[in-house]
Image (cartoon, rainbow, N blue to C red; front, side, top):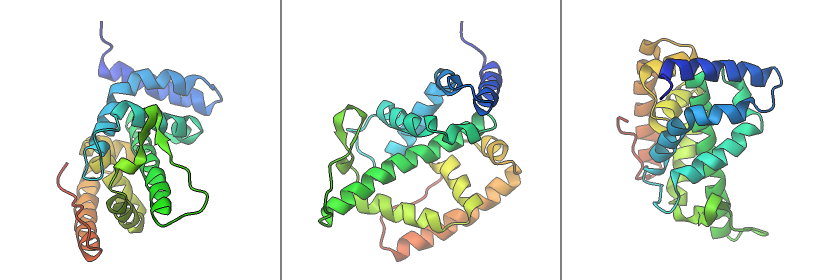
Length: 199
């Protein structure tokens, strides 16, 4: 019998509190409760123009989990906040790999090819496009950047974003419109093919 979503969300919140209180295994117990949500976030990230079919969502989830288990997840207050942090961790995994690839392309010394789990190469990404998008995102107002990460990369709904960030849905909508307009111009100025369509 499937556990209702509300019960899972409550259990995630309880486990996050336990993790902050020092329960080392609490994060491991959260993952099965949000696994399908994490795979959906990963599919969304890999479906962008900089994605490639050789990297599987499961592998991206695994690599992001490693980042989350090193302490990032304990900052989350509840399920939506945890998913927002996970979306950011996945973006960071992809960016880290792209930076390694970019360094090699430019003749970086001491570079080693980095892989995502399962031996699929980060080199399969359009490195320049991914780094251009990342640089533009980093120039956004921090809250607007979080809204974009949650909505565009995480596939979260306005209600979930508002809950995760502790703001109103109206503020989420306003930040999304402002961020999208700014990113459109910033990416066009840099000659990027990236766009930020409605998720």
